[in-house]
Length: 186
Image 1 (cartoon, rainbow, N blue to C red):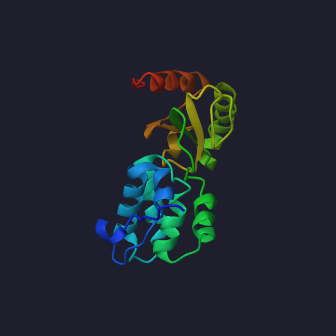
Image 2 (image 1 turned 60 degrees about the horizontal axis):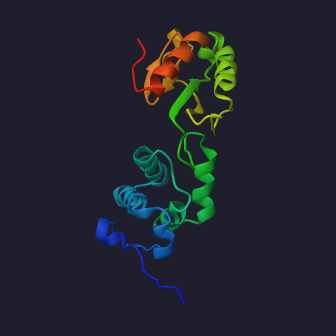
Image 3 (image 1 turned 90 degrees about the horizontal axis):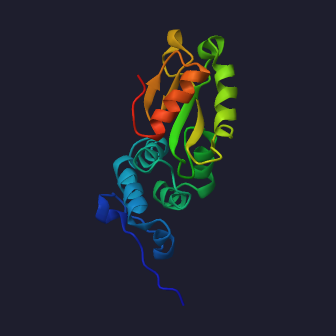
């Protein structure tokens, strides 16, 4: 017989409350559940609440834990399939923690015209992975980005939220090395 307990969202500021089994909550510890509960409480009564909730969770944790899908679905009165569909439709959302530095390479047309495709090939070869994957040595996760707003200065990349312009394959390597060791690229 399993012990049933729940996380009550009413106690975190939620309007209607909601619950998650203790067994499911234990898989992610208090942090993920608290982050999800806070995001749900902040947005649940707004039209289109799902995307802001997913963004808040990813901003706080770096990804959206799969087991938070049920908590979100229950509290928004949606099916798990609906929430999962939105989570998997948008390439911005990660369903697992990123490995090392998060490297986004702009794939917009202006950056492509300025050499982004060559940079993408180099980045994939250097890291040993494709988009939405962690590099072979775990030093970085490669993500596509669709316009950083730096079109005249492309190709552009974003590493851990810091943007870089006029990136060549050689400069990419230097930026990545600095990111690995916590320094900034000049």
